[in-house]
Image 1 (cartoon, rainbow over the protein chains, first blue to last red):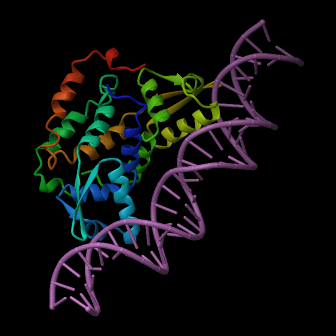
Image 2: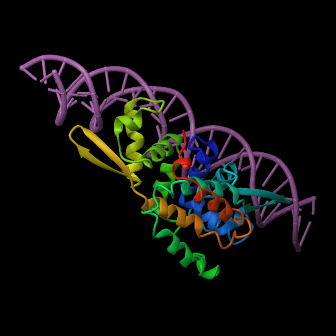
Image 3: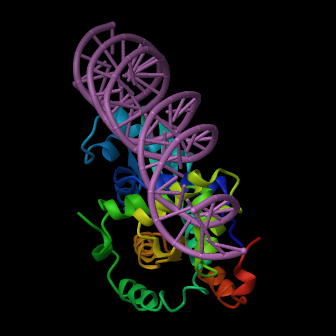
Length: 119
Length: 119
DNA sequence: GGTATAGTAAACCACATGGTTTTAGATCGA
DNA sequence: TCGATCTAAAACCATGTGGTTTACTATACC
């Protein structure tokens, strides 16, 4: 059972609530990147971008590996899974309204992984 | 395809990032409630609680129906579905790390709806 | 009509968030 | 060693968030 009163869910959902952080997650889903690579596509200064990475780390959605002067980041799926479980816990009571979800997910699953990427 | 740069995802994830608002959603998953019923279990003043309801309305997660002096609220599944679709868009690239999710979801689906409620 | 009830609105407060600029430190390569 | 590169850290600022108290409006009930 996933509890509503969960500080972890607080920070995970908050981390997902900013487009720049979702873009970072999207980019990291293609593989490890260092901070400069992550900051480059974002329309903000480097310090601002690294602050967003810190928020993602705090939510344990991103893990950092230091190699010399470069800091490589990679995704961590577990917290996202926890967030999905919370959402999924309503499936029973919302079954009728969720009826179209399964077919949509099936569509996406049948797509090529590369087609599922954006930009 | 679900875009990272989506104001709707911003407000939906932000709405989900507070335990009081998740508790409201949880309560509404059991059926329509008026504002007093929603505010009662929350450890805050009534105006604070109704502000949270407004945030949920702004995210279109909650719809309001006015009947006399009472305002009844009910859940709206669509935005939550959109949030789940964004998360699901990583399933392909994270397949290995998501491997345990399906079985967990199956477990939950086999539970009674009433057992899936909390508190 | 008068009173209790359901909810709104506004003013206010402390603190968090998201951004900037500037300064500084560590490491790599020539 | 020296300069370029990668990142951190700090100070600062505007705005947003989450909460309160107080005052008000509108509806229901006796």
